[in-house]
Amino acid sequence: MALAYSTAELITGTIKSTPTPWFSLLANIEPPALRRKKALARKIERIQNDEELPIHNKIRGRTGSRLISRKPLWLKLNALHDFQPESDWRDASNDTQVTNSHLVNDPNIKPSGHDLDRRTWTQLNRIRTNHGRCNYTLNKWNPAIDPMSDCGEPNQTIYHIVNDCVIRKFEGGIEELNDVTDEAVETWTFSCDYMCDHANECGALKEKIK
Ligand SMILES: [Zn+2]
Image (cartoon, rainbow, N blue to C red; front, side, top):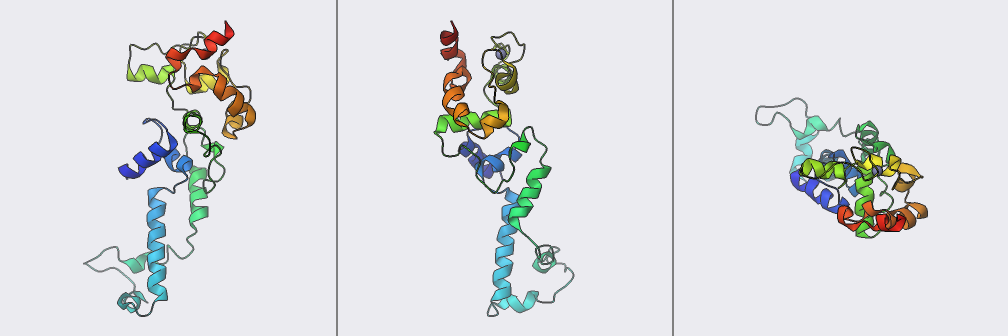
């Protein structure tokens, strides 16, 4: 499980505090529980279709459990009868209660921006998840860093940068960034100093507005 999350973290460029439901949504990899269920469904289908397999007759018509295995394969047959991975994942995604999860309509489709360069893709995902290297987060990692935005807002969160910051906010908001419009990618991500990995030192925009 930990390996799956660390792989998704690497693919999406998100930071460690990102809520885990986001990993599968952004990496376009089904959650571990769904992948296990798919693997089981494949195995059962093969057993049911191949009469030559010794286990084929053993599970047909079997009911109840027995002491050696309290969770025998045949008890899961009914649960897998109408199994549809795509709609299961869509339903699970709709039930997800993490910030901005409404941005993902269908997790079976790769999120916009997956073909962008690594830096922009990474920053885009950090904005989508509301977890990025803004001053508010940096302050949590190192209390010596001031969480204040240079516009005067006491906490420079990702939400503040995108929606409220008088220096950096993006008029199109999180929805337009999520859709990866030309305005979002070609204008904002290349002019906003937050989009640099070294936002605090860079000051690219501060130079621009002088
Ligand atoms: Zn600000």
